[in-house]
Amino acid sequence: MKILILGSGGREYSIARAIKNEDTAHELFFQPGNGATVDLGTNLNIKDYNELADFALENEIELTIVGPEAPLVDGVVDIFKSKGLTIFGPSKEAAQLEGSKVYMKNFLAKYNIPTARYIETDSIEEAYKFINSLTTTPIVVKADGLCAGKGVIIAQSADEAKKTVGEMLSGAAFGDAGKRVIVEEFLDGYELSMFAVCDGKDYILLPAAQDHKRLEDGDKGPNTGGMGAYAPTPLVDEELYQKVRDRIIRPTLDGMQAEGAPFEGVLFIGIMVVNGEPITLEFNVRFGDPECEILMPLMTSSVSDMFYKAATNRLGEIDVSFSDEYAVGVVMASENYPYGSSTPAEIILDDVKHEDIAKYTHISFAGVSREDDKLYATGGRVLVCVGLGKSIKEARDRAYMRCGQVHFAGKKLRTDIAYQAL
Image 1 (cartoon, helix red, strand yellow):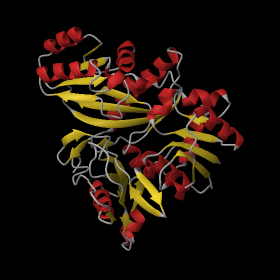
Image 2 (spheres, rainbow, N blue to C red):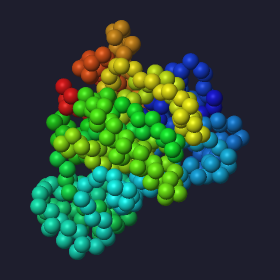
Image 3 (tube, rainbow, N blue to C red):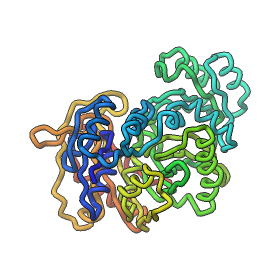
Image 4 (cartoon, rainbow, N blue to C red):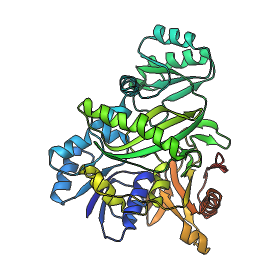
């Protein structure tokens, strides 16, 4: 099968790697890809979605998989479908579940899906009034639009919450993305990432993962796109999975049908578990990164078939299976992440001689470029070292062993990934 993957990060690399490891041979294309995806397929430079769809038609691309949120919110799926192409991802209308936090919160309220108390507004007076009505801190303030995973601020006091609202509504903090805000109560519990692959009516729920958002050990420092993750998490039992199915996923798919925007693609549910009850923090409409990097190697059934059947509304025809192993992913970031860009640095990879490391670890590349057949770290999150094992500790130890074999100037990583479980 000829498959086109949109995106340039570790998420897209890991999807491609899983497809390449299947028994059936597939020809892969990336738009734009990164310096390492050329080892898996062909990188393209076609930024216009109509031109990209024409390329897909001319080259008989049988499946397109969209990785990041921006093309989805921009309507790439609608463009491809208008030309009769098979593409995995939600329509522009359905992508509002991530593209607008106001849309999402109002959708949750309309369909009685559990979420935190909130107000959505563009009025500083209304926001202040709601902040004053909250009896506990912290207070959560969210920009409405896309902010690359950084538009959520946990304010430690009412005064900080008001200052944050003012910065967002003035456009100083996140530009137009913050011209409308959500202010909501802070939920005290533990956070989970759950992913449902959906075809509009049916869905497949993948093993629950935990992400590590903050830059430094012990969940300190600024929020990032994610510094590591592990799955499955022992913090979820079958009863909790069933509550998520019954109270969140099913009413969401039914609600999107009722809204005339059936949800096809990955529904990423950020969940806070409070006293055993799952509360919806947020929806994203694509795989999380780095969660995707640890979920893909746990799949033992065909990854490409799952995406294809979801894109053609036939998920009910397949059974998806997962390994009984655990996966831990550790992000290596560049020197100045997440504050600013970093000087490109050559990546040196040691030869893998240890049998366990060769068999049970791999690297998913993200922020890398290639020059004269050398890989360079070009800023942001550079790569993810993934370890597999029969226990979380074994998987984590292997992931960190692989980290020890990767070298570039200024490399930055957390040393405590999966500490919640261990």
